[in-house]
Image 1 (cartoon, rainbow, N blue to C red):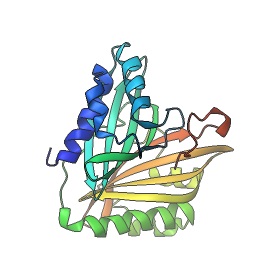
Image 2: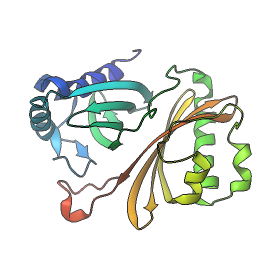
Image 3: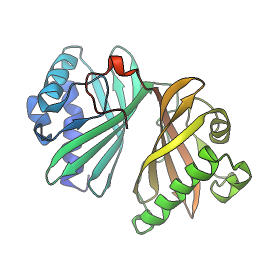
Length: 236
């Protein structure tokens, strides 16, 4: 692990296992903005959540962890009463986390398999643009004839439990790309849209090699109605 910020996020996530209140001190509770609608605002809310979860003997595995400017984002496995896969995004100001987003769904086989090594750091911005354009052109505008401009079909590996990436683009209604986070050959896109009539959050992680997408992971989560939110910050 090559940065203090990554290490502190790693420790924060592993704190779910132990319930250690020290793990949440990385969070600036005076500024903290929580975007998980099921979680209370602030560091105290996280400490209470971790304490409660630790009593159930949970396990947390961080499969991939990345850093992009003030953001640290990870790909995780949670083993509580059932196994779930998540993407976690944290925004830093200085040495503390001030904002958090996530997207979590039940596990299906193969969802986190594949490459984990970060490469091509010098191509980070180039790969960010590629991922952003791919979402815009294929998922939002539905210009499927351009797919070969973005995806290396011969090398491509799919880890989505739903369907192949292009079938997903055809089946779901992506409305807005909120964020693209990138470190080297990995890019995570945070998208809002609809799965049928359900307001949905789509997180898509791409691995890029030589200017083309060669691997894809995702999580898909229903956005709960506002009446069920435990904070007022919204999912995105």
